[in-house]
Image (tube, rainbow, N blue to C red; front, side):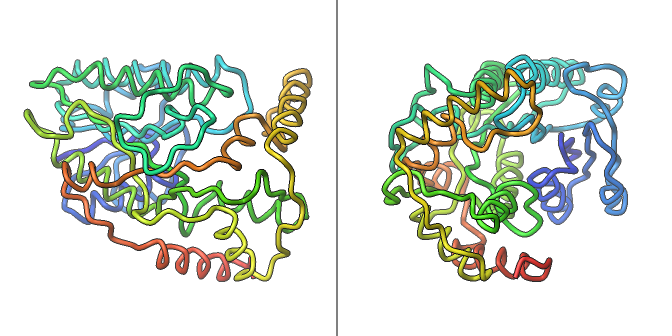
Length: 334
């Protein structure tokens, strides 16, 4: 098939591009930025703001069989309007354009945060309902975007599915692990809560494989059509024990400071307000949403995806951690 990947120059998007190429598909990418590495792979690249649509998006969609929509605005800083524009309006514009060009398959990268309500979710399945209250614009915008994607599914000519990878990590990760390590190295990393929470994580190669398998499986009557699934390692980890092992492997200082969820939540509320008043573009050191994420369990059942998609985990959690640590050491974190 000929597949358009949005955000193909990003961390997950790049892994999706490589997986598609390895499986013999034609690949093109559309992103806001310019990524020479994609051209080195022979991937036709287009630059556009999805929320604006326009001629470049139309050019990118000509002759395309399917879209894998990885592009999104992530983080906890910025206005609600900026997240809605990028994540909701951008997705709506992409859906309309894809339909107009006769694209038949659409796989959307969503997030488990669409269901996060501040409580523990342990081995939760895809029937977990969306949250009704959001503490940050990112999960709210992703919730509305996922709903738009699944509502666009007609079961015949336009088939959609949504995947919710959780805490994507691996070699080349530009966000999650580097931010964690910088905080630890500066002594600013604090354990929130008692440290007993269990979480599911997603090795980037496994996440990419799930997206490509979903694209290949989408057809009328397919079990995954019109549905959303969690994507993560089959083996969850104790979050703070895993962080401790990671820091030890990299000769970084252990986490010594511990705060309660209530305290971190209150501090997060103050820092969020300060960021808004100062119109800061950087993420606050703590937020209410992050405080809850760091203190609660959020693990997800991979059984439904394995059953309906035939997904088999390629890289185990142990091997994924080993590869990640090895890459970090090679790049000077040791």
